Amino acid sequence: MEKVKCLIIGAGPAGYTAAIYAARAGLNPLMYTGHEPGGQLMITTEVDNYPGYPEGIRGPEMMEKFKQQAERFDTEIRYEKITKVDFSGDVKKVWSETDVEIHADTVIIATGASAKWLGLESEKRLMNMGVSACAVCDGFFFKGLEVAVVGGGDTAAEEASYLSKICTKVHLIVRRDEMRASKIMQKRVMDTENIIIHWNTETDEILGESEVEGVRVYNNKTKEKTVLPVKAFFVAIGHKPNTDFLDGAMEMDDVGYLIAKPGSSKTSISGVFACGDVQDREYRQAVTAAGSGCMAALDSERYLVEKGIA
Ligand code: NDP
Image 1 (cartoon, rainbow, N blue to C red):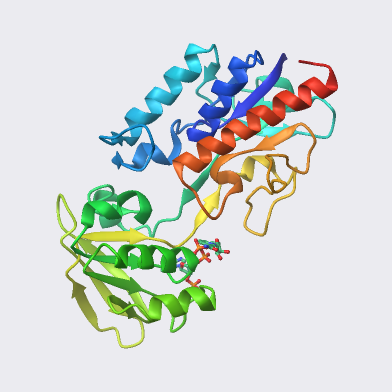
Image 2 (spheres, rainbow, N blue to C red):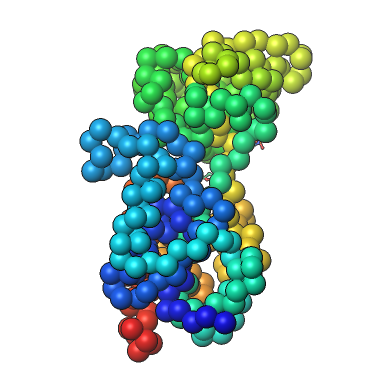
């Protein structure tokens, strides 16, 4: 068994920022990265919207810099998963996949959310070469071009609206004859001239070898196939928060996002804090995740001071 003051689970912008702040506050954080350190930014090419990088930076390079900064202040990083938790007592118990038992005074959960994908082979092959799950991150690269968005929820509606301002035409591919998005978002999409909604439509294949050259869709009622001449394909069919390992140990919403008290990182368990996409179904940006990581470290520090531990 090992004892730490602050355990951080997850290594995206939120986790690394929490580590930098916790380490500088003398909490000697221990971080478990899981199997995909860097999180969603590792599958992002150019990051142009993070302040401080006027020329932009590649997602993996940015995450390497975050990691180096966390290590500079003596964060111990382990490239393993946490598979089990017991938050019932004052001291929080967690277990790693290699069965290391850790007792922590505070735990910061920053395990993120993973974008859902359609599961097509062509989607995988053209990932980052025109296939993306984030219009705000990648839309700019397709300025002045024709693009497609798949999905019928608020995310898809928002992404289509965002893209309609920078692209010539946005094809919104909706699998039913109605959208799940809120009425106001639906109206916005329907009132936008250069958004074309394809109802009852599903994706057959994304075309192209080294970049997206079109997408073949089919109407699931008539079975008629059409090729849309798009240069980018944005998948917006939802995200899955990475909270399975918590096994219901704390308050979550209907899809598994952790619920943090508004304006803080405090969860339903005293001493356990949440930051980044695992508690944010709305903004999901690197910069907002980093900001919430800072909040989680400051909340942890305050908690430890109140308990007389730090
Ligand atoms: P949702 O789960 O709400 O919607 C997912 C959409 O994708 C649905 O239209 C669904 O279709 C479709 N879909 C799912 N799987 C497939 C598939 N395999 N092929 C084609 N289409 C598919 O996810 P969102 O990310 O849109 O939203 C998540 C939550 O976040 C919601 O509560 C939303 O309101 C909220 N949100 C709020 C925002 C805001 O307030 N500004 C912005 C973004 C999100 P079907 O309807 O047929 O199941």
